Image 1: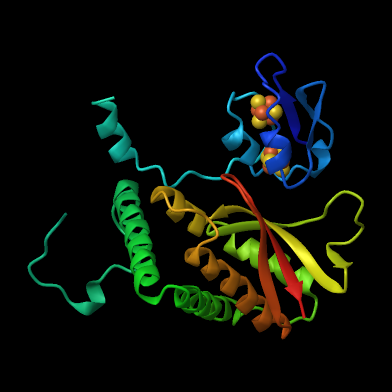
Image 2: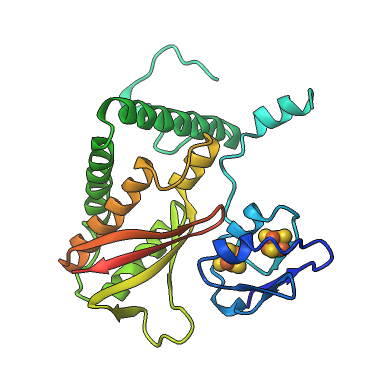
Length: 81
Length: 175
Ligand code: SF4
Ligand code: SF4
């Protein structure tokens, strides 16, 4: 089963994760995001993308392959950045 | 690259050659080409681009599923399709908590939820910084509808429920 952890120390309670999650996994309680329905998480990681404080962590999920990462371009950029 | 002075048809290799980096370069080239075609199509055909790409997807779906054994069991057909497509479009049937079947009937509509984990379309869109749910996604709708139609003889429609960086949730509505 997917395990989702919200770091309450960095969560600012903006509610974006609760709003964006299609499976209603989060609720804002006491001004912080709380995981209330982890069983329905379909591992889309939209919550990761939208969370402004990187407060969310998923464990034991399938990470889709990142074939779109152009390693050649990345290594070239690394020389400048 | 090796060069031969005389090449006869029977000497052409039957398997792919080269190393993996050659394929990687080709893959990126194809992704860029695909995205550029879609952008140009959108500029010229605007709304019509969805229909064109949908039709292309549908043809691919019919073509892929042509050799599958026919069945009227949609659930079985989808599972087989997922096994075969594995590397291109890795999808699973999804059952929300509290439902006892993958085939759900709600508000007079019968549908199956599909979660797409790996997807060639998503790879291309992210490679090129294009948003999801655009015309290129129509190819996948067409693909699934075409394949299901070919295997089961049933018509359907695919709707996006949610798109994410790692997985997309789609609804295959059965007619
Ligand atoms: S990964 Fe997707 S489904 Fe899971 S909690 Fe995040 S937004 Fe919700
Ligand atoms: S999006 Fe991030 S910061 Fe905002 S409520 Fe959710 S976990 Fe907290």
